[in-house]
Each structure stands twice: as structure tokens, then as C-alpha cells.
Image (cartoon, rainbow, N blue to C red; front, side, top):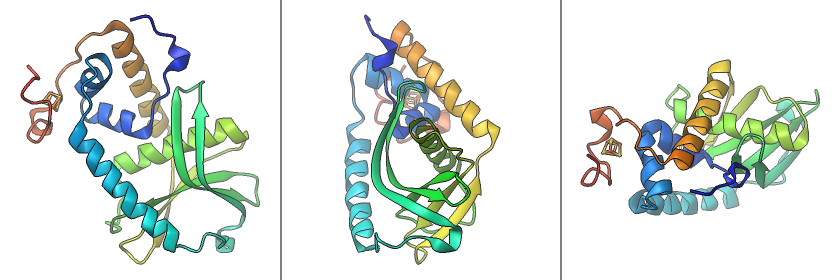
Amino acid sequence: MDLDFHDVLLTPSDLLEHLFCPRFTYFERNLLLPEFQERREKVQRGRNLHKVREATNRAYLRKRLGVKEKRIDVSLVSTRHHLRGRLDEILFFDDGTAAPLDYKFAKDSGRIYRTLRIQSAIYALLIQENFGVTVTRGFLVYTRSQNRLVEFAYDAEDFRTIGKAVREILEIVQLGKLPKRAPASHCVDCCYRLICV
Ligand code: SF4
């Protein structure tokens, strides 16, 4: 495939699907077989979140956190990291740092799941590159727990995982080589299981 790597910009969903099973990358990007069911669910979820965001007071500045400015619904691209994403909110703090804030149509389980950490850390990379500020933490708002705000710090492993996944995806796209299977437990409800050998 004649492809300029600068053209490849991956979304958090692309990376999370790849981390779930690298064959998703191959089926979607090399064989051009989109995962329709997953996409439909995402659209529905997106609509729900849209309603939640509309109900939120967007002018509210989170002063308790030392926020001096916030931006809402921002699309960012990083050609350096091969990433792109649409961020619910970016918070800019008094100390010169910034952080992404993401609304989750879910209850707070008391722990930050890996998928949420990775998604937020991708946003952190996008903010860092586009605004030239330090981003060491992310925020989540759980809309089904009375909009509870949860803060967490990124670690080196989050960014290593992202870098490795991006490199693997670019390699699959370029070489067109079928990756290894995911663990069998991931295959139970997979829409590709009938064609995946
Ligand atoms: S059937 Fe299993 S190995 Fe194949 S794409 Fe689905 S999750 Fe991956």
C-alpha cells in the first residue's frame, strides 16, 4: 500500500480497539471491514452524551480546581503522534498546566479503567502538542453518579502503551500482515469471529 504515514491520524477508539485485539486494525484498515455494530453503539452513546453536555452549565468555570480558562468541544490533531480527537473540555489552570475533562455516561465504580486512562492520556498528548503546556492529570465526570468529578494522574505506562499501539497500527497498515489473535475470551461477541481464522 502506497501510504504516507503523515496521513495516518488515529482516534482513541482506533487505539482502544487495537488494544482489545490487533486484528481489529487489520480487518478495518487493511480489509476495509468496519465494525458496524460497534459504530452504531458509539453513535447512540454520543447522542446520550450530547444531551448530558447540553444540560450542563457550560459557562461554569471550575474555580475550585484553580481553572482560569476552559475550552469546550475541541477537535485537535497531532501529526507528530499520529493522533486526533475531539475533547469534551480542556481546563487551563492558574499554574500554567492544563488537563482534559471527559464526560462519561456511566457510574463511578471507584477505579479508573485502563480504557479511560488511555483515552484521557491521548487527549493529554494532543493538548501538549497543540498548546505547548504540561499535562500530568486528567478529569472524568460520571454523569450517572450525580456528575461526580474524578481526578487522576497519568503514569509513564499510559504513554508507553499509546506509543506502542500507534507503532503497531502503522506497521499493520504498511505491511498488511495479519496480527496475532487476541485471547479467546475477547472473541465471544466479536463481529469478526466468523471470518477470523
Ligand atoms: S475473533 Fe478474536 S482474534 Fe478474531 S478479531 Fe475477533 S477478538 Fe480478534
